Image 1 (cartoon, helix red, strand yellow):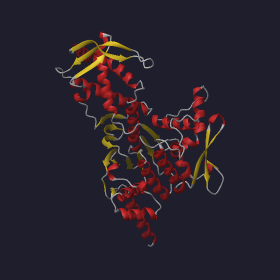
Image 2 (cartoon, helix red, strand yellow):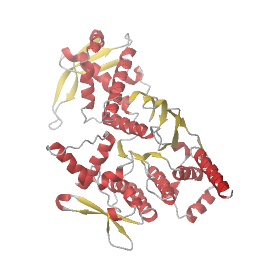
Image 3 (cartoon, rainbow, N blue to C red):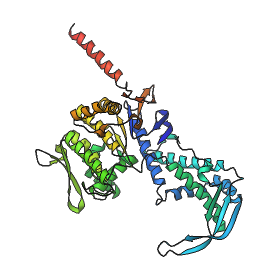
Image 4 (cartoon, rainbow, N blue to C red):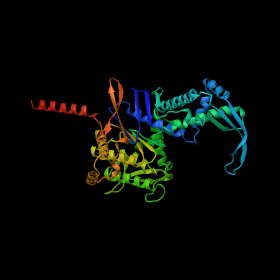
Length: 470
């Protein structure tokens, strides 16, 4: 996914390429979270538009043809030359009994028509609707995003037509032109939806731990609001609502993915092996225990930590690192595979000791190597530097890399090629935000984001030492 945004909060213009691992880094209030929100929602909209079972395409098309400004376009389609061939093809109309019937075949000939204006008009209409959906997802009464351009989406007539013609099967001559227009609309939508990053997206907000621990209270608040009690004035964004809804589905046993059964040899066997390695890494190197689930009444699930040296613990009694990782662990436990998933994780370093932040960076790379696409927003120099180390290992001599991995009890899964990583610095510039694409080479991610702050801290420390020494 590669796109350009125009006027997003404090950002005037910025280009992003979402690779297997994408890092947004910068100070607070520089719109990193807004940009991550855009990535999540853009993927969500594009992935639903490619789902044939979804009514999204039909809804958009009806909105398009009911727009008064489109009447001239519809009239030009009507006037296009068409050739009608009666009873040319047999088409299947009943998938259960395999009955067929003959139908008239209509071919619209666009060889003498310049309809580039139509392609452009439909593309602009779809993009404007995407922008509108993204703005609505912020759940506030103002426009956050002004414009978006899909940089790899170049729709041409050759993509839409075969020999500059469209052939349809239809018995109603009065709507021939609308079916042709819908065919063009669908093909353009398909081209646009191909720009998505993954088939499915998951969002982990910075406040995820609070939502998890206060889940029951949040749900009861929503019910009070719905049934006329004390109302809740909470305004949550769509990604956050999706996160809470996903967690609710997990607790009630309705989450969409199949539960994993390690060792069960089927077509997803190797995916499950990768998932098992990820869990072993989390449990052994970060939380020092296992997150376990217990079904309560009516299939409602409770979660506990089971350290090696003691019985299970209620989550509020565990370390902040365990609680912080809980939302991610719970979702991963209910994934049957990592492939074709986009994970947007805000501040994965929250509540983690620097050593645990280093392990988290390795975990992010492992998830990418298991097939996921991962986008993070971060303030952590430790995470950024360890991702750089993972990149450097891909450039180093194989024998020396093997020694390094053995020494630190790591596997090849923490190594990533520089071509699979993108990183962006969100920089404050007199009230606006500049987004810089950070250079990534054999030495990792070029990172001077924290250098100025560290230099300033060291200068102050030296100054204070001089005061003490007189």
